[in-house]
Length: 487
Image 1 (cartoon, rainbow, N blue to C red):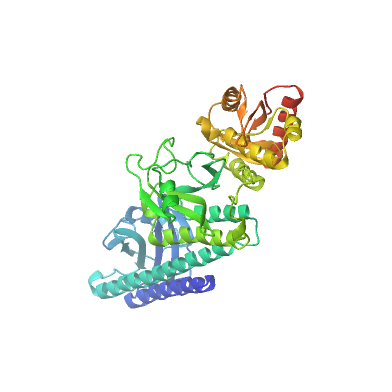
Image 2: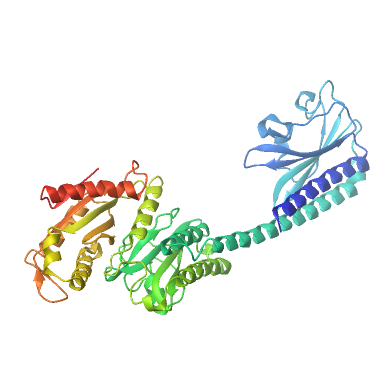
């Protein structure tokens, strides 16, 4: 059903109301009939239509409750007859100008779902015989019920159909020609659209663990970026079974991702991302209201993830699937991914200013020695060792490592502690103080230097953030300092 057809239904609905009010006036032989809706949300009477042969009647579109004589009768459940001059003064009949002909008023309430939603008013110079016109009033109210129910059904059908049209449009946004990170970003936006009281996070493998690498932009109270996946969680169960898992939470159990989550309530729906039959990620959808997850909603969510995976799969050869699709070949996440994550977090800052996100660059102290000492193949394996060593999750810190350039790694950490980056670096350098054991055999003496910054409202995008981090890292290297914070 198109928008034009919905507008047509509304026009026809209004025309029927106009005809009914006119027929009620002519059949009851009164001088004026009108109908208004009782808008309780805005505390207003909203005029729908009127019928009269009088030359001195004019209605406003809407009037505040307290400014109209009908205010005393907005909760009426039975017809009420008034006498002008006794029950209501002529001065309160604002729809007349010059003079007031009406001497008798009959107010007919329209009840829907136990609430007075509209008032129909008859005004006459002669006394209105309620018994005589009872059959006409009943017929009018019955017709009103039927036409309102029909209209609401038509609108509901339209909204249901529009819902699926919107869903089809959402699927069309997952264009296989886009970069895989862009596909996942758009998928997360569309998933979020279906979760009014919750959100979604994306977990992916890298650094020898699974971590949260992206949060939907409008998510409410999402798990921290970088949280590390644990067993006995909804996300782990979905990955283990290779199919979506729906779970309701009772007393903070089960956890969505990790036992480090502060609170787990409502319900969650975890959907694995399967590319060439390999688990390349998992989307954890959650909402405070378990009723959000209707069967139709779960179908939409799982299908959005499936179509996104198929779009990525179409541009990834099966022979390339030895590595994770969101990392470089030594386990650090793609620049496109961590840049996307940073840009989303910058947009989320307005709604969640209490969340502290640290972004920076880290590098071995003397890269030139490594480059001259080891072959290219060995150097790549060493870099994979470095990425695993740097993984913040190894030190109980939510965060992840991304590729920036050869032997220079980006990182994103979300933590409330102002000293978290310095503490992380101290632990790493303390761990390898007497040498770092390599997977290729032997060990190497190395210290890591770091330059970092905290996201704030002055940053426009990931590029500006990383420029600050680069300046801080350059200062740390040039001044032989292990860590430098910038901005």
